[in-house]
Amino acid sequence: MPLYTYEHPKTGKTIDVLQGMNETHSYIDQEGVQWKRVYQVPNASIDSQIDAYSNTAFVDATKNKKGTYGDLIDKSAELSAKRAKDHGGKDPIKNKFLSDYQKRTGGKKHLSEMKKYESGRVKVDY
Image (cartoon, rainbow, N blue to C red; front, side, top):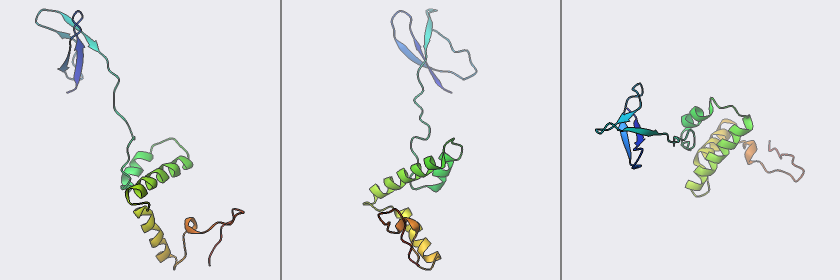
């Protein structure tokens, strides 16, 4: 049951009253004075913090969002930077992915690890 805040019309004193959502939201004290309901801005925050170490938390937070693929990549990069900050500059999840990729591909490096030429072309080691 949620709390509702009421203010005395003359004294300005406020109280919180526990009421059901389907009840009438009014408060009358013992003297018969009807208190004014105080409406407050909700302080809930949605998706402000995603667990950087949980892939399911990332999927749950992004699956129903209206955004671009670039937005998704940007959010992923933010979480990677947070993990890297926590672990002395190296993201353990990214490092595991890159080492697993090398094992699967017979020692080839992932595209993100390859050196780029000044012209922007990627050097590919075969």
